[in-house]
Image (cartoon, rainbow over all chains, first blue to last red; front, side, top):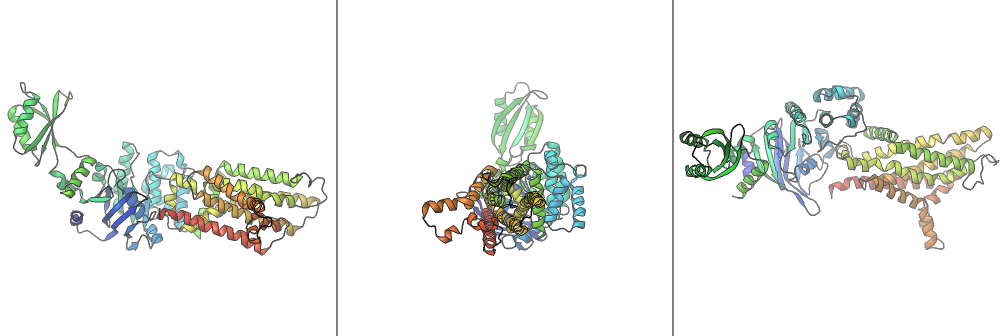
Length: 331
Length: 243
């Protein structure tokens, strides 16, 4: 936890301050002392595996739930004391985008605007603006139930940003979409990020890398990392294994290659991952080391006459990152 | 206040968008039509009787309301719980009480429209005789009040579950219980039921309305039941915070 606070950069005004949030369901502790800040204009990614506490955090931020202890302030307003004010400041897209399927897009957005107390004249303007922002103009007359998942997501975003909120809270905005839709929605979020402060949750590291300025990683109800992606990857660099794909020179067996690699200075462990035929028959090795040994491995392969078809640092999947980070924290 | 009306409009539109409203409305019109033309035992046959009265209709319409209104209210919150839209609704800048009132008002719209359609019966009577207009108005005031109390009870049960069928069955039991079972139970338990308990029965409270008498005590009673159910529904919505 001390680690995470030291990573906080000196950024513009704090819009959201989460302090020591604890949420206790009947028998389960969903959040166990979560703290972070979100600054004006930032796109903050809340990253974590399913059940880590992302949605619970967002539900408390949006005043849907109340924390067992701890506090949330949004633009200086306490979410518990001043819930209505906080709801005025926020736009919220809950997980799986719940919408009234029986309503027509235009009517639905007008309904949301009317609930937000816009006078009639301004209401139509706001709805038209939201529709323009999310690119829904061709679908205003459609019933929501007729829309594809991607367009339903746009309706969900439109209702969230209808009142031009200072803060957007998006719970897994791309889950369940096909790859093209994911790209469209990500682009849209990046576009919105230019004029809004956004918190989005995801269990997809690549998504957070593409969209977010900063990331807070939650694991089992605790913050295990908080910082920019560069900072985070710096912390993780030491644990990165190297993947090398080699077409071995004739006369060299896989066992020989493993033994030779093992002999390179700094190498901890070498594994034969698998054989592959594409584009030519070759073998994938994984090398674990404290330092980035790609240059040394390349030099060794050239000297031995092996053809290098692939040489990269293994990208870590989310589980790997959590493992690394949690070990990190314990150390 | 705006939010309450907006929500009420949306609820009323959604109600009339679903076949349940038309089924419930038709059931009510058919049953009240039969009561109007034939009475509950044929004794008040409209065509034979020399009396221009709606009393059999007013006496038995609450039975029908107790059955059809929970079918109208069952979706109010349960459906939103199931689909997840409740989370968006309660995170709009409106209070939980406003949400409950808006939904109740929307359902009240259905009740008012349905009762308005039955105005055809007094109009028919007026063409052939001289009904007591005061008695007719009194009866309708009573039906609106007891109907609203049923709606509020139905709304309350809808906040308890995400399953509309359960909301309907529990709502139905609650409405029928308040309408008649207090009577039956009281008679089983006591030779002479205590006045305080007897006064709890919707039936006792409705008697005067059926005769066309609007007694302020009966009005206050039904409004109080409605208010209690509204407050209980609001607490039920808020219970998400302390679960």
